[in-house]
Each structure stands twice: as structure tokens, then as C-alpha cells.
Length: 400
Image (cartoon, rainbow, N blue to C red; front, side, top):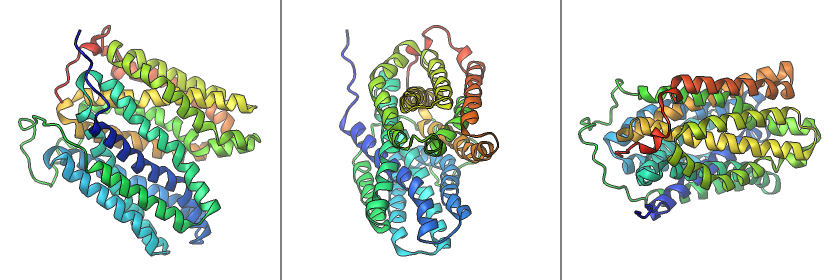
């Protein structure tokens, strides 16, 4: 029996660390920038929300183009430019207190984030052995999951115990680490010349999106609409229940459950195929929303966090792996297409959830959202899952 290919190579560790620090800055600022805009800049809630929206908008707009750039101009040149923009933007926050300038910096920062995460996701797919794609992408996704736990906690601690300049300096340090680790990734030799003859940095509009990736990306975006309510409002919901202290551990439990399950779910994906993993993960996420909707104690809230962490945290990397399988020779375009559509779901969900919660309350919102999530199972089977037979997935060959 042949030995298993090594997963935790130096390049994979570096791409993991770089991605973690990029997302650490993202989540840290996700919770602190609105507060900064309202407290220090003395702007209203509309402006506070705009600093998040304009960042995500920039990331969404740049991703399809980045997907082509990483294929035509190379992974590392795009990554170096992206992480440079990301780092420079982090420094620029220290230079102004003008709302207009901050919004411009946020847009630039979003461009660096969108380019950087697309390039890093593509590099992760490149350095992971073909026969361990599901497992490897699952571990890679944990860099985002850990950042989601550490970022908000660190950000709120810094502005409460220290100051906004200290918070910005922390972001600069994180961006520097992301740059240093990202630029030491060794890109494996890839035979893509037959697929990409264009060498211009001006992307072609034709093929900007990988059509074969769109179905699985839409399925993920539908579920992301519901997840946005958890990400944006779970702390508000817990406060209304008088469970503020437990809410601080919600995403900690999320991360712990994800960490414990990752070695199994990734390997099962590679061995038994995506249907065996994706469908149960969507069901688990939906059940987690139901438990969250009826939570009255800290224990119930934390159980909900564990179920949501297991379901959501398993589903997303699995769907990203499916996207990569569609066009393994164009991993950059596949990654860009998937996350462009996926991020639209998160962004739209944050807006829709806020409006819906005002009308029906968060408890009812989470309950009804669970049925919305369950409906995604039928969408998944219709668009993708029904096309697979048995463990056909485990026999797929990767050419990346």
C-alpha cells in the first residue's frame, strides 16, 4: 500500500499562516471599525455600516479579475501585490480621521483582501496533494475559522483596554506577518500553458466566471444568507436573553467542535464523496439554527454554537473543494467565482436579516431560517449531488 502524500509541508503551513493573519485583520476590523467610526469620527450608524459594506464591495468586485490574473500572470506576483496593498492600507488608517478618506482606505483595503484571499486559496489548492484535497482544504479553512474566533475577541479587547492606535498597529503587525509568510510559499510547477495563452494583465470578460462552479456557489450563497444572521446578530440575540457571558464563548465552542471534527470530515470527503459530507453538514447547520432559536440557557446556546460550527465549518470547505474539482486546471478562476457569489450571499444576508429581525425578532428569524437552510439540500441535489453515483467522487483524478 502506497504511503499517503504529505499534507503539512512548509508551503502549506505558510499559506495557512498567511491566510489566518489576513482574515484576523478582517474579523478584527469587522467588529471594531463601526465602533471607531461612531466614537472617534463622530459619524452616524449609516456611516458605521458603510465601512463594512464598501470593504466587502471592493472584495467582491476584484475577485473575478484576480481569478484570471493568478492564472495568466502567476500566483506569486498577484499575491505579493495583494499583500502589499493589504499592508499599506493597514498603515493608512493611522494617517487620517476624515470619514471620506477612511472610506477610500476601506475600499483599497477590500481590494487587497479580495486579491489576497483569492490568491491564497488558489495556492492552497496547488500545494495540497491531489488525493488529500478534501482533507487539506478543510484544514486550510480552519485558518479562517480560527481568525473568526480570535479576531473579534482581540479587537474588542484592544479598543476597550488600550486604544484605537494600538488596534491599528496590531493590524499592521498582522499584515506584515501575512506578507512575510505568504511570500515564502513555494509554488509547485503546474502545466497550464495549454489552457491559458493570454499573458496580458487586462482580463478577458469572456470566462470571467467559471460557469461550472456557479451551481455549487449559488447553493453556498443561499445557506450564507442564513449564516449572516448568526455572524452579525448572535451577540445581540444573546444579550436579549441575558446570556452575554455565554455569547463570548459561542464561537469558541464553534471552533473547538470544528477542530475535533476536521480530521474525520476531510478524510471522509476524499474517501466517500461529497454527498456524504455536504448533505449532513447542511442538516446539522439547520438543526443548530433551530436550537439557537429556542435557546433559553447558556448550555443550549453553546450546543447551538457547536452544531452550527460543525455544519457550517464542514460545508464551506467541502463546497470550495467541489468548486476546485470542476476546473482543477483553473483553480484561481474557480476560487474567485465561488467566493464572489458566496460573499454576495453573506453581504445580502446581513442586510436582509437586519430588516427581517426588526419585524419578527431574532428568535423567529433563526427558526424560519432553518427551513430556508433545509431547502438548500434540494437545491444542492438538483444542481450537483444527483449527478454523482456511489463514491464516484473518491475516484476523481486531479490535474492541478
